[in-house]
Image (cartoon, rainbow, N blue to C red; front, side):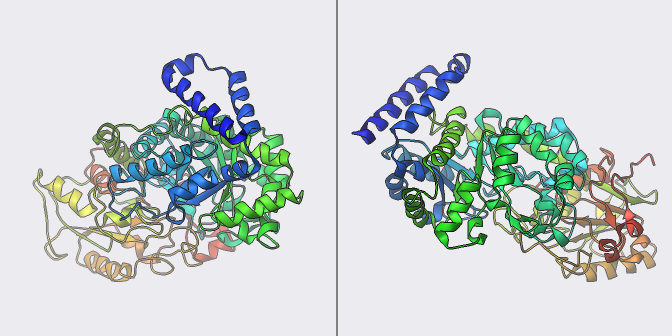
Length: 597
């Protein structure tokens, strides 16, 4: 009878709230009513149902029937996961999400799902989506108003697929560019985050979107820039450098925070009651949902059950266990039966989860969706991505050769010259990035210049000899977490494209022939350059500008817009920088030229 009563109660609430409409709900919002609804719902739930709410499974490893049976609280599509194929369209995505959501609504508890995804630079798992510049670019741009618009556009493109929970933004303060997630950071100094985090989260949480500040805390401060490594820092430094972006996220009303794989002085964050409960929940007053990272509990001490108990008791509310969610269900039930986790801790976790669902309208409209024709990959969103990209480009050198006049005979070469996938980088349709030159949207640098020259006196030519201007586009290969770590962040080693060396030799040959030579660097971090790079007449860092990067570069090369990006990371002069940074700086933090200079 208890389960039947709980389901009936939720059904009545769904019918009542659905009839009021979103505007009326907002006008009649009663915080005490919210609390009453959630508390009565918790009181109606069995322990099994509560534990189901605390689990997050990957869609490839759970069926709709299992969602219904186990009262699962959340599903995610991991990086590079798609309903069937990587080029599935928005309707296919929505039908998948709808199937899982309908299963959740048929469970004993009747509680709707949270469906999550890493939309870290646009709705990047989805083919044809607007791929915005990565965070490293947005830090170079450092414009709060534009950040809010990007956040809103991303949320709307997600909601065209029925997805509302975004595992973004990363608010990591990356202190070592050897870290493979450097490009997911706005910069090396928390002052950059101070200008951007609140605005971005406001945009992401518009239209009842749900944002996630990650990864708590100090993932950007690990020794040697090692992913999932150890931050050997004093609490004073953590509070001064790595904690402020989370304060800004909380001030912005962020709904969820994801815990870092990394450690502080040898203690894994997923097991740190001090940082997750004492600091985050109690001191900072974070009332939202604390989410674990992908299988991160497996890095804790002890057997499987002990690992889960450690994480939950430390303060983790929802466990991202893509494959092992069912084993976790039984292990947590056993832990509660044995008194290893209190009912109060379970209720606190579920209360936070249900509050996020309720306050973001999922009980009222669990299957809500915006019109893809109006909100997915629109011309307005592409124009926004193009504006953000061009404002993020950093002009490193210019010997009075830029802007171009449009009369030049130009030869465009290098491994990223005709490749949209390299411009987008990691977390683009696939977890580690897409090696495909075409992503269903955008133009490569070569295509954008060709389009521009169709309206100018100049023209593209196929050789250095026939050109007066040579544009050489270097690149790193795409990468994401773990695989992106390198102790050789240089133009030729580490994760640099192997064709960079040949392109560089050709650039030097062009310089010897008296050609104007312009270098463009596509990368997820500053790269140590060879000394002879000063032979280039101009040098531009475009980082990872997304699918509109080619169009945006054409805009600034031909002077439609000037350069305004400023380095949010120090650019090392050599690898010796990592041992003695003060004496090995090529371009300082905040550096960037303009045409007037």
